[in-house]
Length: 240
Image (cartoon, rainbow, N blue to C red; front, side, top):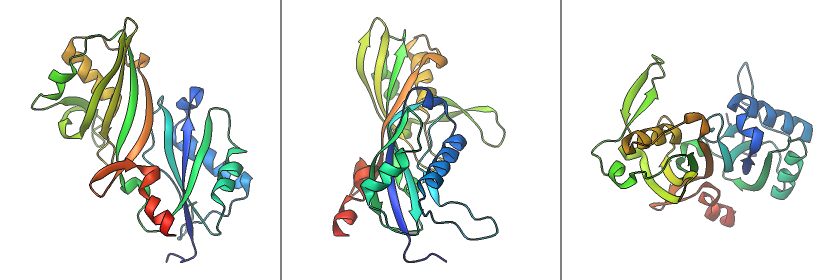
């Protein structure tokens, strides 16, 4: 049974440099150690194996950097938002910091079930003359995706998961793109998989290991429009 005095906070963090190579599980462990060292009275789940009620919203693939990712924590006592950012940052290594915190309504749904799109910026070394328009207007856009059950690579049509692909800059060194892609439970489009398909369609070289991807933000739909997840709860916050 949920307690009525539980508090939920949504925090924004960035992850840069070598910290992009930390796995999701290691990031969870890092945040748990951070909570413990900061003395935060985190809430726990019920049952025989209670665990901290925390949530990293739509974790990134290994090797991706991020400007704005999201972390939820339920606490048993209230905290000033700025203070929560300050004490959490005291226990973090270089390359990762919390930058924003907002108390949000506590409910059975977490932000992972609300977020539906991610905005990425990607740099493709050596890839030029990308045929983005032709790629987008295809009847279907196929990528190779690993099947969770069989672990085999299968072809999947992801045309409906593409919100936008925009060329930001093209030089002799390569191309820089902005991509708005589906990012929801069981419907997340990995930008590297999509870029591989785009390069193949355009006849451009593609080196998976050299692609640099940064997530710029996560978005949810509110009143029919996509808004940054940090702004999704804005009205509730003002009413509170």
